[in-house]
Length: 97
Length: 400
Image 1: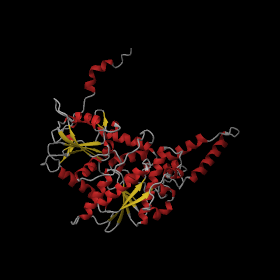
Image 2 (image 1 turned 120 degrees about the horizontal axis):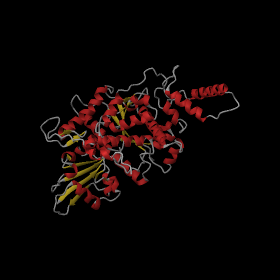
Image 3 (image 1 turned 135 degrees about the vertical axis):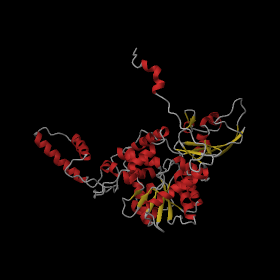
Image 4 (image 1 turned 90 degrees about the vertical axis):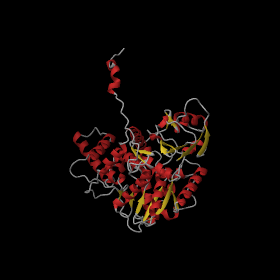
């Protein structure tokens, strides 16, 4: 399943300073949720210090998540079922400010 | 084995009832028609259009309500790392470009204060280039000043502005020469914020600006307010955290973003495709200073109780200055409470500290000891008369 993952607001510093990543998620029997995606990101994209991105199986407080420009709080947060061609943005509010 | 409390075991669920989550509305809270795309304060949902209109309106309302800025006034804008500053630049640019009566009619001048001494030369250069690029994308010129150069030579503002060398290898030493190395992190933070304020006012005076805009948002205001109280600056809360700081006779410091959440501004920037300035920060131990601890406290409380910050800020808004205080502190320019016959808590604390640090001369009678110590205390007290309580704590930790 192909989706786009973006990092901004300083979160890209943890991902080799690259903002946009086109990602092909491997097929699996159950649906892909954001919770699964976070673990996948940790294993496949994250370059350094996972504690600055993840905390207690979710994103660290202070990192905002948008799915197709919609707040993930409206979509069920970690339980949102990812669809093909979704654009998921992680915005850090922690790096500076 | 201790069995106290065992009887409650089966009741825990009843006693610790889980708070039921408020169900989020399916339509925008404002227009009641569109599908919402953002949740604020954990309960209010807005569609993209209403959210953007509301955010711009909130900024303009905070400026408009104050009625301080007049036609063609010059305003120094402190540009900083992070989402709030970029949003502020966008608010200003769109406001200046309007052709309706709501157009902003003042002249902003942007200033970036370089104080990121944890970065190496390459990262520092990159940061400055990025700052320049972002500010010029809004059609403003970006001006620079080095914080370390200013504190070591505060009289020389004209030459320091936009100087070629914004950072040098000895910047940290320069800072340490002014702020004593031995002072605690709490005091260092306090001194730095005093000096930063002084820098902004000096630059504003040099460029004949009557106002300074700083990009503090609600969470900064809330943690500053609590830190102020714990550092003995309680009497200055209203000027330090209010909308307008008018301690200086010529330049007023305004906080036009003090009602905004970080989430609001970060998403505002995202929807407007604005890039913010970010930097690798060195890890700070939250227990190393009062200010860091307060920030941690507020952030963590806010996570579970979304009304925390607004409650603190609104409570702070109800506090006002002691109008009778005529003496100004020579460091922070805040009012110093003048003591009358009644002994204040500040004096008692000072007296207690003084007495505990004095050696007792046992050859004298009790009466004599009392009078010598009282006289000595009165003398030292006079020396500190021109300082507010909190500044007496940091006075001596740095050179002016």
